[in-house]
Amino acid sequence: MNKAINQDLALWCSDFVHFHLPRWEELPDIELYMEQVIVFIEKSLSLFLGNNKEKIITSAMVNNYVKLKILPPPIKKRYHRRQLAYLITISILKNVLNLTEIQVGIRYQVLLSDEKTSYNLFCQEVENAFSVLFSQIASGGERVNIETDVLRQNTALLMAAYALASGILAKKAIELQRIVSLNEKKVVKDE
Image 1 (cartoon, rainbow, N blue to C red):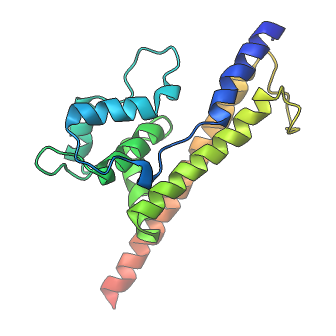
Image 2 (image 1 turned 120 degrees about the horizontal axis):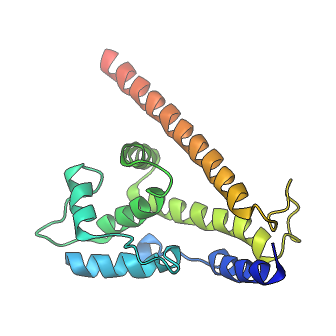
């Protein structure tokens, strides 16, 4: 990869190193209408768009998530902090998981703790993952010595391979969590 591309990539990655997801306490504590929700989510996740003109979220997506019971329904067409946390989580995870896997993963995580704790943990883990991966590239690969040089001609291929590996691992973890959850329900039911 030439030097200009390396510098552009390093600069782009530095934004992700410092990326911050709004925590539960930072989400609006007022009721929002659909259009306000869309604006809030788009603004919160704008870094994901880059130069892409695609929408991160639309009202049709939100309605579909409610219909599929992935997202708690609004109350009198108004969305609360709880729905915003779900929408941020779904909007991020849909890049690597299908909606069924997201639904199972969210439900399992919420079983382990409450929604607020689960959401804040999710935000922290996303930020940690971004920091680890993107700081390697932002620093020119000097900070962390990984097995292969990320700043080379096949950076896109290498990162796609990491994304694939991470996605497969996440799907397996969700599958195992689902099995454990089903077994726990069965044990309780049999008692």
